[in-house]
Length: 146
Image (cartoon, rainbow, N blue to C red; front, side, top):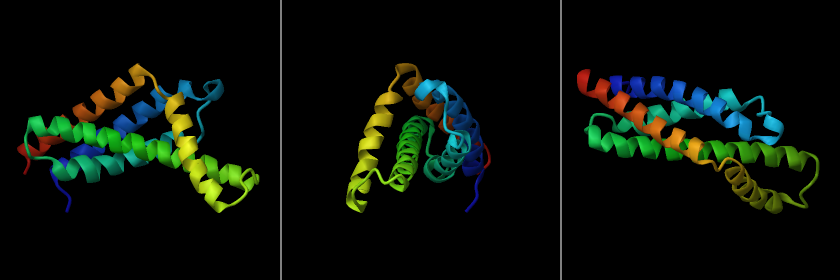
């Protein structure tokens, strides 16, 4: 059911996803991010805002900090997984894997590799602090417009 908290969280996470995609762009090979990075980031961020943070909005500002960190973690995990999955599909179409099981295991290897490539303290702080700010924004609207 749509609520003010869910709408505020989805809106805040829309901006959050766009910002994080732009902040993560220099960490890719040769500084060129994949073309699908910004739309995927915005879509995943809006879903995490609506489903993870927005559904829990209205429980207090202290809880909102935890909800923001949960939303940021869910966003990060889904982004790394989906980008690795897309890379695995591209590699499997070039027949770099011997079978489907090797390709499925390859997703997790690619996740570790991508996570290692994106491991930067500034990016991690941007993701965490942005998630907290978005959750506090959603909490404000959930309390103000129940």
